[in-house]
Amino acid sequence: MNARIWIVGCTVLLASACTEMQGTSSDPSERFFKELPEGVLTIVADNQDLTAVRIDPADGCYIYRYAGPVETTFLPLRAKSGGPICSRPADVEVTG
Image (cartoon, rainbow, N blue to C red; front, side, top):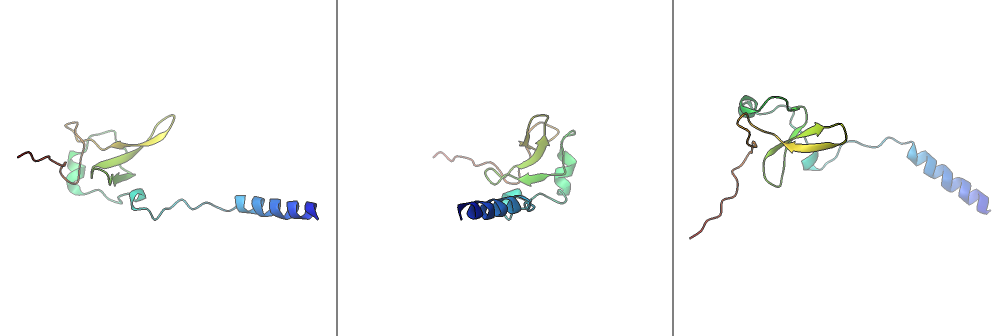
């Protein structure tokens, strides 16, 4: 009886391991631009991968996926001047 339970349990576990994982997410932070806005394309610096660009919800700046030799990470999308490209201005503290 115990052997049958183990066999059935292992069969279910092995069958579930063979199913394909979904690579898409409904999380908005995982969505990439299909086409970047024209204004961004005119100021973006060279040597940046523009195939996977999104806006970081924390600061509103554009980030791109960098696939390095060790890991894949997101880096800020830089303008030709060297600064980050943002979709909204940085928060400014008002002193009064």
